[in-house]
Image (cartoon, rainbow, N blue to C red; front, side, top):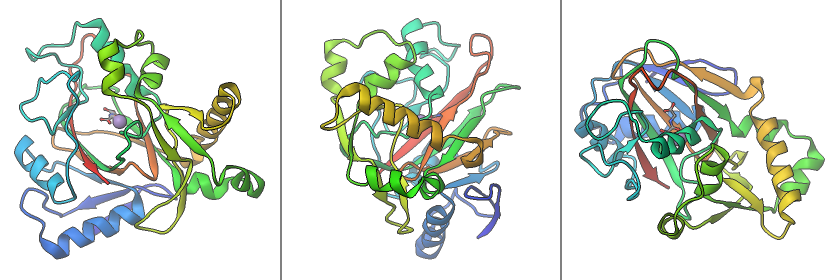
Length: 279
Ligand code: OGA
Ligand code: MN
């Protein structure tokens, strides 16, 4: 596998690696090893379609299905809609949907609000705005390594409660309906985890992180905010740019965070589709 590292800590850009045909054991192993090392892999101009995107993702594990309140613009339930288009293919007019999408602009990792975590996300560009709409990534292994030793000791055994609706409300989404609340109850995960593929420790946090189990809410949220700020300092961040439809970025949700960036989403189209692999 031909990989160029794009950031001192993480992120590789892969060339000459065909993702449209079945990987086979050796190439699958090479892909997973590279993911374990780099955390993020960028592939340019892959030629993937909805079908081959899903087929590729299935080789990495069982796929999460998009929840009922998702837009269902897309034909397959395995595809999460990360763009700004409505069911009819034109730019979204639905205020509630737009506010829901704004949650992606907060630093997060996918599906930490579910009890069953996600390992990989594979985000494929179908249509890109001419300016803006980049995706930024942060390295949670490097951030953990850089914490002062006494902080590491203090947080070692903490458990965090993640709630989808917490990040949505932070982004300005109105209080969720009872049906929405019932569909996505909070989930608990350890704050410090060991990444299975590399054996390295990392922070597991996100905008979904709502409180620390057993701590007063204010104190927990203050620590979560402090860690989020620490972990998303420039030195841990890579600003990935999408160049053309067919570009694919795969990230490991366990040891990285990501966020969408601004673009003129009222007048410019952005069609991005994601599969999510269950750990
Ligand atoms: C996602 C996501 C960011 C983006 O699909 O999980 O957060 O830039 N996307 O679209
Ligand atoms: Mn995301």
